Amino acid sequence: MTALLSVQGLRKAYPGVVANDDVSFTVGKGEVHALLGENGAGKSTLVKMVYGLVKPDEGQMVFKGDPYTPGSPHEARSTGIAMVFQHFSLFEALDVAENVALGMENPPPMRELAASIREVSETYGLPLDPSRLVGDLSAGERQRVEIIRCLLQDPKLLIMDEPTSVLTPQEVDILFETLRKLQAEGTSILYISHKLEEIRALCDGATILRLGKVVGSCDPRERSARELAEMMVGTELKSPAATRHELGDVSLTLKNLSVKSANPFGTSLKNVSFDVREGEVLGIGGVAGNGQDELLGALSGELRTAPDAVQLKGQPIGHLGPNQRRSLGVLAAPEERLGHAAAPDMSLVENAALSGWVRMDMVRNGFIDWTMARNFAEKVIADYDVRTPGSANAARALSGGNLQKFVIGREILQKPDILVVNQPTWGVDASAAAFIRQAILDLAAGGAAVVCISQDLDELMEISNRFAALNEGRLSEPRPARGLTIDEIGLMMGGAHGMEVAHIHEEEGAL
Image (cartoon, rainbow, N blue to C red):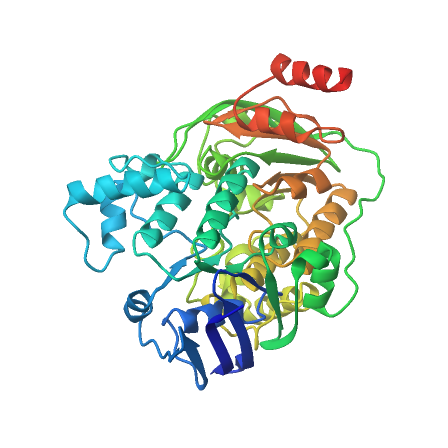
């Protein structure tokens, strides 16, 4: 396979950490090539150097046979390299065409651009209406906007960072059809994902990074997902296992909860009801943007409700704020780790204190005991294997996966009676995901009630006792997770309830 991109000896160091050290790999023309590695292995820094966001300290790159030294993303795009980031860079108050225009070097007149968007989106099986507001789009449709914006620039190399983290299984299938069509037309794809079965299904080759260095390469189609994970971590991978235990009394109750979203583009909750018992994990699935953030806010106290709508062991708490609920043992970890779960420019010690001062008794005469806060932060770092030079580092200096481990560990180590968590393993590697899931299972085994909101269906099926799905702010009736099929889950996520799902189950049993 003829090389399109050749990377030789790239190195990038920051104070206290070497992100990439003598990294070399090649992407062939028309190849889908995976970059695999644990959180903090250096994948994001590496693709940022390829895309011109970061300048390497050492090494060289060759693109289409010529030396390649991009000084900016503009130079990368003009050379033929485009990138779809893990976090969408879209303006919700603008329409699709306006967002696409903002990402182009020389956008055509809006009427011509709208026609191009329709043509290209339909050609690649990603239909988009150029006039729709981005704020009204689902997560999968927003992903389409990012991809179409790249495709309109006719890239030779498309970099994709965790592109399926917010997509349903059906949307993943559509995306893969698009990527295979691009590959057939000669476009190369550099693909980052922690979903190893996706890597096996899509990619022709893989480069494995560990602690900033290349430790191997392989054809992922010839390896199992477990083998790939163990190549990444360098040790045997342990799968999470639930401890058999009896469930206790009802701990958390939601009763006809209706909440108006504080976000003009959010989804209000409509008559949501469920209960969670001591020792139980209730898994809540759904496509992004169907009320997940609002549900976490209503449970954490960030969104106030009617007092009786949220009950802790029969006592109304809907009117209480976050700190009052934390003192009662109701803790939460939101999806947006940088900005919501953690203050970006504050140190890990300060971020530990922000959440932990209530339950960890860190206040002395009205002042934070910073020695206690530091000890707590360092325990989280040690127990959850957070890769950082030290607790004094700012939250924004951590990789996304390592910050996620810190946020989840910070909440679990406070020994909550109720934990509400949204996307607990979003963007973390297989080893860290297994560790976090095991920690959630252990917390439940100790008697805590857990509400796990996630778009990762495999995760929910692995750790949940019961499963429900959010759709347009409404929650399906929780059902035992064991025995649920993908078709049943898909129906629940699409808004089908009760008898419709049961009918599908009966039909499958008859086949």
